Image (cartoon, rainbow, N blue to C red; front, side):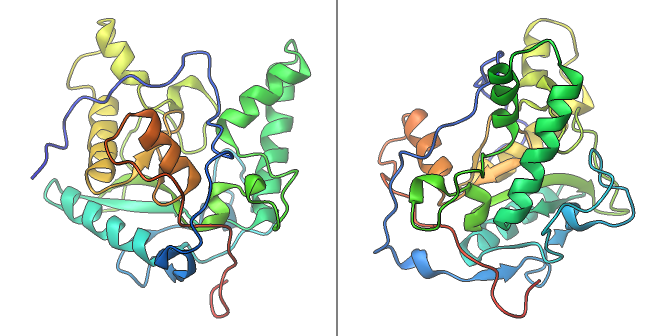
Length: 269
């Protein structure tokens, strides 16, 4: 079994940047293009529809996001890989918990607006362009979404992107990952604690470092790619997945994505 404690590579630009995956084409002839969305809870995975919560416990929002769906759904192929990653961490007394996967464009717009307002309030000294660059680091821009324009499709609208954390298998408590889910801060960069370790600022057994290593290795080992600015975000079959593989110089990396924007099927909401 691959080691889940392998150190993570240093990939994030400390200044922050979003990944421009829009230039990656789609392969509509791929059999997976029409793959269905499935309810991940019914696939045996732990889920929590973070954006649909009404109890105020979904920081940093503390309220439901417009258009959020109650079902955490992803493509069937994504579900298969998630089950493999979940099995890999089970030997450590852990489980994966999926907080978000398929996301309607209305929800994407709600998240963009939230972070746009948050960054403007917290960093008023920055120019509008600088503020937008920070927002883009954490949220795909939905403002030019056009179903006929594949360069405008946010990756969460494809069902190939998932947001995942680790929890204790016994009581469901979320592990300390060193930053909260959807925290718009450098602490959320996947390699943040690896950098602190390299500078001698934390020990090699720091729980935040260890938690991230286990999560990312479990997901990457089964085929996902991680978005280097969000320790919780992983892709399979999306434009971001393809671009990350290419940027990492993976031999035989695919040249086109096989999951395009889609809709939640009837029966899931």
